[in-house]
Image 1 (cartoon, rainbow, N blue to C red):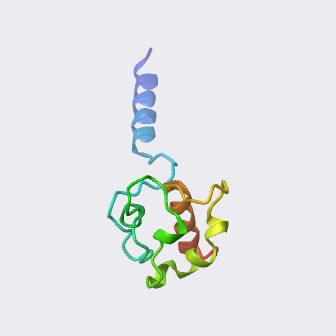
Image 2 (cartoon, rainbow, N blue to C red):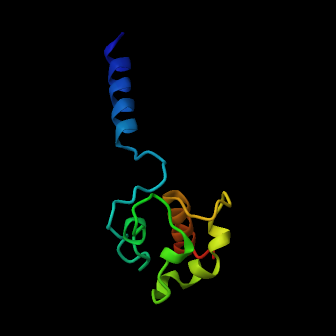
Amino acid sequence: MNHAKAGLLVALWCAMCSVPLMAAPTVQPGVRNPGATDAPSFEDLDKNHDGKLVRSEIPRDEPSLKQLRAHFHEADLDGNGSLSKEEYQRYVSNIIAGGV
């Protein structure tokens, strides 16, 4: 391999490594996205730590969750009566984007 090809491969490798992967945003327990929403983290709401939220775990007095309480069945994408962490994050992201 000549030097030009090797330099091109190194440059291409560096460019690929510097581009963030296109994946769902990572949400850390207890950490909110500053300025995006005032919604509590999934972990803060999952009081019994079973990895899912039922409607009764959604506080009535939390203004940022009023829409979620009203549209819980729409956020429950698989229709099992509870929200997984992914369903909750998707719903909150949709609120941020102005979708609901």
